[in-house]
Every structure is written in C-alpha cells, then in structure tokens.
Length: 208
Ligand SMILES: [Zn+2]
Image 1 (tube, rainbow, N blue to C red):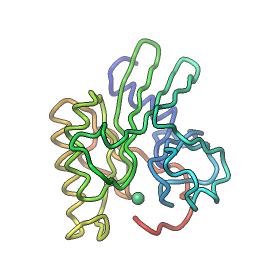
Image 2 (image 1 turned 180 degrees about the vertical axis):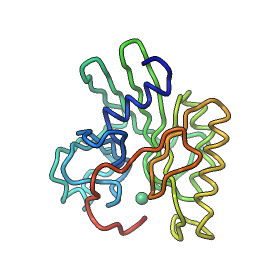
Image 3 (image 1 turned 60 degrees about the vertical axis):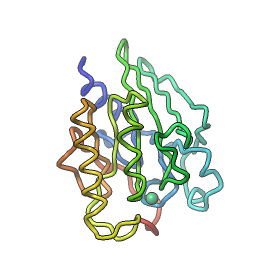
Image 4 (image 1 turned 90 degrees about the horizontal axis):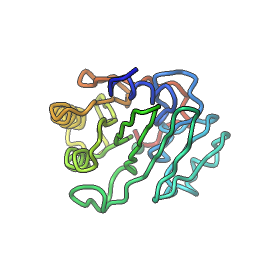
C-alpha cells in the first residue's frame, strides 16, 4: 500500500462517514450533522459539538462523541485519525450558514499521511465555497454528497444540485485531488471512489 488512493481507501475501511464506508463492519462513523438519514443507531459516532442536544440524537443507542471545534484525534493501532470541524472563518468565502458542518480529516498509516475534507450534505448556495476551501486547506481528497434529483436544498429544479456537485467535483479532480462520493442516495460517475451505505438510517428522513 503506497499510493494516495490506497491510503484513502484504507481510511474508509477503518472509519465511516454519514453511514457510508468501504467496509460493512466499520464500527466508528464521523457524522456531518443530525439529519435522520446521516445518523445510524448502534455504531459509535462522532458528531460536531454544535449538534449536541439535537432531538434525533436521543434515539441513538451507540456511543456518541461530541467533536470539539479545536479538533479530536485517536490512535487506532498503526493508524491515527484527526478530525477537525471547520468554523465559518476557516471556509473560503466566509459563509454565514451551511447545510452542515464541514469536517477536515487527517489520516496517518505508518509513514503515510493524507488529508481530506468531508462534506455530508449541501444546499445550492454552499457549492461555491467548496473548490477554494479544498485548495486552501491543502486537501488530498474530498468527500461530496452524490444527489439524484432534489426539490429542497435551495434547488430551482430537481437536477440542479447534482449538476453543480458534479461540476465542482470535476474541477477539483483536475487539480489532482481524489474525489469520493457519499451516495445521497445515488452513486456518482464523477467519483474516484464511491462509498457504500453500510449502516441503517436512524429514522425516517424529514429533510433529504
Ligand atoms: Zn441534511
């Protein structure tokens, strides 16, 4: 195992994101926000401290860790993971709202290190911040939600959000970043890696 792509794949065999991973038995998930379709009910989950007290979290059976804004890291044998929820001032273009918290992850495996940006869900108005932030944070990879048609999330027509995400994913890929898709709920043609949904959702979604 040596290339960046291999290390990123190893990461998603070790830890999941928003119910998605590359290995069905991952026991820890990072979670971008407290919407029903991003949470599961039994595995250990790490969610930004901002969502502590959210009503959906009352139904979660497994351990919940509130991720502090200053970041959190955990050794996992030969591996090490650091996650840091980004505050608005760390996002290029300085938004004053986003659909969910964006999370930076750094992963070490032996002498290898990769850094990525995890984005679990988007509104149309959030898309403009992605490219510059990924570059500014010196990310090696980015996880983006892969939409089918959505009529919410600020979309003017059902395909708009999927098209905007595809466009930015291709731009970022041209800059040399690895693109990873989290199905929301469809797989992506633009992605280098498509994650699989591996854990059942906590509750019926109110907002897809
Ligand atoms: Zn959401």
